Length: 134
Image 1 (cartoon, one colour):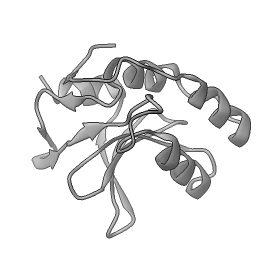
Image 2 (image 1 turned 180 degrees about the vertical axis):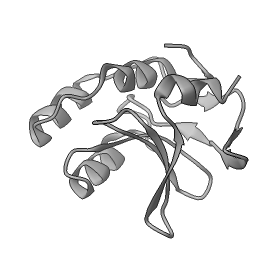
Image 3 (image 1 turned 45 degrees about the vertical axis):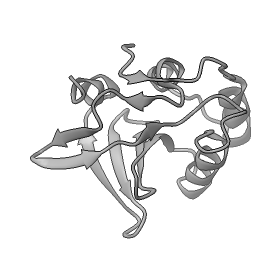
Image 4 (image 1 turned 60 degrees about the horizontal axis):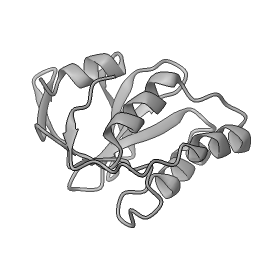
């Protein structure tokens, strides 16, 4: 998995995945774990991406560093896994507190609009999502 961020957190706690897998009786896709491992708490090198002619701003990727008070993944992952019965994993956030998420069953990447509580597919895979930053 390619790193597409800078100033990322190097203190990585992958136990968060094990805990979520036990709690929700799921197996988190390896590409989600790899993406967050490479980009934990990092700021994207390119913060505006375009998918299907729409612009999306990406502020930061979720952090696997417990000491990261602002972007640690624990609360968002619990929120989305509870809300979607173990299907949605958050991987990033924009400046309006809307999330970038991966459907753990299909691998598709979505933009979740908090105000509308709606999901918009922006990439068929994490690799395709990563390519939007090139």
